[in-house]
Length: 109
Image 1 (cartoon, rainbow, N blue to C red):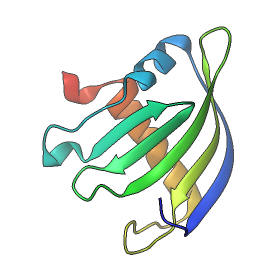
Image 2 (tube, rainbow, N blue to C red; image 1 turned 135 degrees about the vertical axis):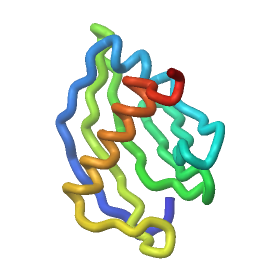
Image 3 (cartoon, helix red, strand yellow; image 1 turned 90 degrees about the horizontal axis):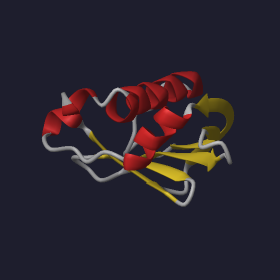
Image 4 (cartoon, one colour; image 1 turned 90 degrees about the vertical axis):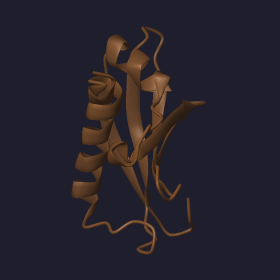
């Protein structure tokens, strides 16, 4: 992640089932899948598969009941690496990717 960043506090809960899927991560198998995602030490790293640039880092705390709490998001602010529009759109995109690639696992079907 470059020095140019946008930091955002969030309050998004994931169920136990959703959080278990998130922790599995995702590795793209072709250019269409676009993302490599790794969960490690309460951090969700989201990299573009074709450039390797880290675009998002989400802080997801593991709760005692097995659920997860997304409480912070770091967004790549380097316009040479990520052509961001605005913070709300970035958050929406990150959550859509988590939904499709990790929770729904559309690429596994």
